Length: 309
Image 1 (cartoon, rainbow, N blue to C red):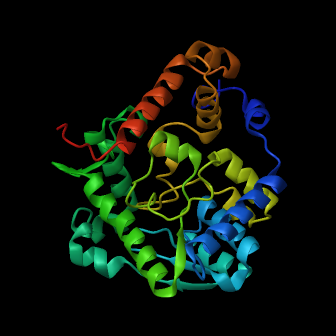
Image 2 (image 1 turned 135 degrees about the vertical axis):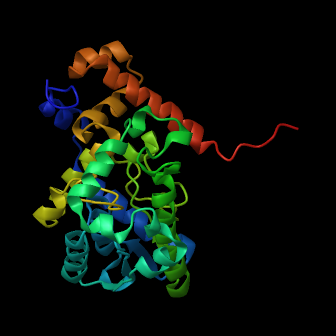
């Protein structure tokens, strides 16, 4: 078996294959009609240089034209410089207006970087050792109080380090959207939504989510159809909150999307765990972990809980 317990890479394409020309047209129509319904001048997208935001931006341009799409790049101290360059290069290629807003001063003022001082960040070897020692379990095996998993100091969880970053991005997107009368367009995909590997008030906060009905592997195929730059199409997905090129989505979840997506698809179709194991050639424990993540995701979407009266 391959990494993650799956030996059926070809079956992923068979199970999840779509007509991407038709998919593109449907999403473009959705974006266009949403802007009209909400009475906005266009859309704003938080561009990270990653797969999802790049596809969302490209589809928005196809739907509305470059003059009605605005890209907001929000790097900070721990962002991968190459990711920022990729986002800026794509904005230039698509001929959209964009702005680079450095969030470092705000996050430093809040005190976020005191959890991981500059001296540690600059020493990649030391940082990797600290992260390796701190990682306990994947996000799929965690309870809400355990998320995220990495502990930087005794009693300080990575949630405290990551949460302000993703939510500040959301605040700035809505602020700029309000100023420019633009529709805040999210980049959340189905793989993330079903497993709740996002923050509902951060990267999940938006007015429309054009990609939410597409799995990550499908979005990668859509990116190829859209002829996005190869370095974006092949780049591992990452929240780019710390060592973005190393601490990827798949590292955090403990499995590749080529394994996760078919399992999610078949579970959604009502297949039993034993049937999925047999069809995909995955370990039963892998399927059970995905099932648990879906249960936790459904629970989180019911929050905040209200007291019964």
